[in-house]
Image 1 (cartoon, rainbow, N blue to C red):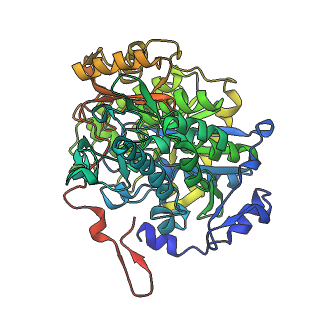
Image 2: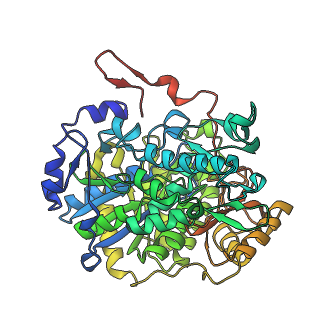
Image 3: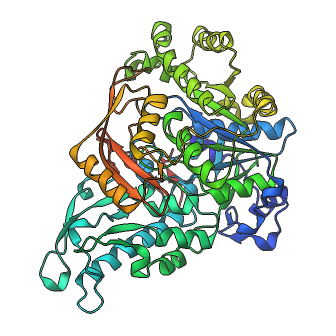
Length: 553
């Protein structure tokens, strides 16, 4: 059966019953139908935080390696072995849903439900973020046009684009304001995908509404004609933007296929943003349960590094264990086996590609965390291939388990759950950030590039060097770094698989996200507005006259 067909076999519990598991008062639920609800922020209580489990992965194949599926299965398994656990995830973006990857609600018997709602509009958080972002865009254009209340903004310096939650490459670079003076001032601009919006990053890093409003006001827009920096607060935009996000800041409660509570909130991509769910969602789960399982997007070099160096540092969080998801197919892919042949046995390719896993394990240890490897099993994996990876990890003293969460749900991850519990007992009290914020921007970029990616050096284009000068002039050198890089390779070149060495990271430009509290060095050919593939997933999606959706996965 497909993921959607498996999901339809499950009889969901009313969301009030899921809330009871967490001792949440029914009157505190803001219901979105029978199976979804928003939670108030008052349940956050740092004095009773449980343990935080970070789930990341090796460098993935284009289809991903199942971090979300393993996260859901692990949380279900922890409950099965007598522990209290909640899984905390990001909301899916419509770009991947209709693009190449499909949905992001897990798979098989490790899914969050209702999967159609979560994968499509859910509770409207993405729409609210999009509206708040584009409100600022409209206010900027209106002020440039104004003759009586103008801030003297130089339109050539405005860095704030518009966003929409769809893959549409034709919107990357556009010209607005054509058609005469009544239609605004013509200027070059473009669209990013909503998941890459600074508003998304801000929502996910804010600790409360006051912090949200402050961060929104700190958004850097551009300069005046006399070189004065302009921020969103100069347009008095933060109040209206925060009002649009009134409900979006509240985390969403749903359930897994086995009735495990799941909190889903925020959806920044990990290759162009910080790639983790919201601080309020994570802290809510930590306050309500003993083990919070959360995932960070793509490989450990992207989402997990940002989870630690940006989110945990900002929110004063510290993981108690790190699970590294690996698949036989991805390891063979990094060993040179063609993508279309990954279902065929290939131990020789596996032996070459295992160095990718080895590098990610080394990266986890850089943060003083205890890694546990989870082999997300596929039907095509051979016993010989699985045994090779098991032995590789055992020889290096790395706990490892074969997780069969797609086919068995929580029952397929009980061994993994026991290993994770043991890892949390042995973990140090605090992780170690990779770099101090006081380092120069160049030093922080170099540290990530050399230590995490394995680069030999970092090169900057003329545009990036100009951006560095601008950042220094604005006094923003102490911000964290949020690298925008391909997820397909440890390098910035998607064709360099395995564990590349002696390569140079090229920083094309550096975007400023002062409200979010980080800078975004854009490397290689990475785009903040993706495009659709030749055969988009949307072609398989349909709905019948009774409202039943098909083709969503």
